[in-house]
Image (cartoon, rainbow, N blue to C red; front, side):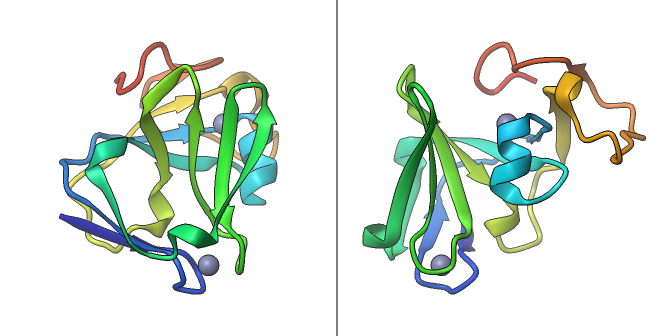
Amino acid sequence: MHHGSCLCGAIKFRITSELPAVQVCHCTQCRKAQGGAFATNILVDRNAIEFISGQDMIKRYESSPGKARAFCLHCGSPIFSERSSLPDVVRIRAGLLDEPLQTSLGSHAYTASKASWWPITDALPNYPEDYCVPGSP
Ligand SMILES: [Zn+2]
Ligand SMILES: [Zn+2]
């Protein structure tokens, strides 16, 4: 069982499943949405997330057709993203989760559009564009 919350604490949730490896997304949209060099995402089965509070505080922004980014209406924390083509999966933002986590970094995606000022210095798999399938690798 893992717990997470947004910055202001209005949104609280728990994840009842094991956590797969963290995917680092360097795409332009994630960089802007996070205000950083990348987003750190964990693919979770939608049914494995239980909101303890603040579900009514979740606002969705459709950043591209069929893809929405959910954030806290009060503090603006990114919570997760979701795609209509993958309705059973959400990409929860790893930074919301309380440490320690039983998982680690898995891969980098969209490295073709990564920030020029952020070096990737690890030896993890790199994908110039999207991940192939949910949960891989
Ligand atoms: Zn909040
Ligand atoms: Zn991205």
